[in-house]
Amino acid sequence: MTAGNQGKVRIGLIGAGGIAGAHVAGYRRNPDIVEFAAIADPVRESAEKRRGDDENVRLYADYREMIAAGGLDAVDICLPHHLHAEAIIAAADAGLHVLCEKPLCLTLDEADAISAAAERNGVTIMCAHNQLFQPAVAAAKALVDSGALGRVYEVRTTDSFFNDFTLENMGWRAQAATSGGGELIDTGYHPLYLLQHFAGGSPSEVAAMLSRHRLEFMEGEDSAQVLVRYDNGVVGHVTTSWAYEPAVGTEKFSLVAEKGSLSSDGTTLHVRLRGEEPQTQSFEPVHEFAAEVAHFAECVLEGLRPIQTHIEGIEVLGVILAAYESGLTGSIAAVRTTAAAPAPVG
Ligand SMILES: NC(=O)c1ccc[n+]([C@@H]2O[C@H](COP(=O)([O-])OP(=O)(O)OC[C@H]3O[C@@H](n4cnc5c(N)ncnc54)[C@H](O)[C@@H]3O)[C@@H](O)[C@H]2O)c1
Image (cartoon, rainbow, N blue to C red; front, side, top):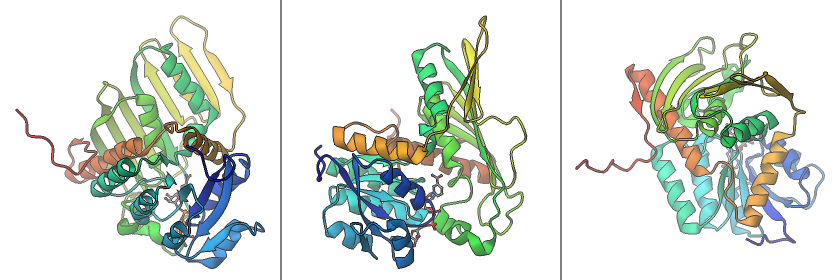
């Protein structure tokens, strides 16, 4: 695809709240391939704050007006969760490519509508899964893909921190209708897409235990333990929480395989191959959002498939919905990735 302005992708930001600051920093670090063209947010001060002193960025209260005004190649969605699906579909139907914060959407009906919109408009939808751009993750993935570790058996990922939310400062995250659940569909999305990345198959079944250890005012869980079986035999285990700091020594991700194992705290990667000396690599941190924005823009400009599209976003959503079902029923739940009824057997 040729983007509109001298080989740059003209991006309109939708939602100028907290995480939008990191996305804007990502645009600013990629001036050769990204033009920060517009912002839509009903709160004028938020839009102005994200624009900074760049008068070229047009401001809108309503993202539909921003899309209708033209002059964009893509939108970047940083909205509360319950507003993602509608914005993705509105942008796709206007022929715009989409970068969307997690979660992609909240239900399988929304997922089906997003898939249909991507297909009928031929646009790229990339899930803004920033942790995939951590150098330790990329190095571990390259090692797994090289076959050096052999077949992967099990993967563990974690993302936990002490979150000082109160009911007053928690906003739309306190209600399941606007957040989609609790911690698992929010921060928990990160360790689940990492799991997906390393497992390399499609999720088939899930067992979960959900807890509200500390943030009692939330409607949903503040902590989750999730076991996922993938169709290639890999078993994944996620631990994620807003209730506590993880114990010392808790890894960010680890993986055991036929010929050895790897483990990482996010900046250091330890690799052990049976019969060989253990190896440790350390990485300088990168600006994950700059790397994410650069990847999105390059995919749009070159017509490439992003590292994780709506397809992986929907698979992660399927795991989360199955985890919620498992938490309620106390049994293992099948993962579904479409609301369509399964084909009859035989
Ligand atoms: N990748 C990460 O590490 C990370 C971290 C935090 C949040 N997020 C994700 O980013 C998204 C936004 O989270 P946040 O913390 O920035 O939320 P936020 O509440 O700080 O910001 C949301 C913004 O959307 C605006 N908004 C609401 N309705 C709108 C509409 N109809 N049109 C345009 N703008 C509208 C609000 O005014 C607000 O400025 C969520 O999906 C969240 O899960 C990701």
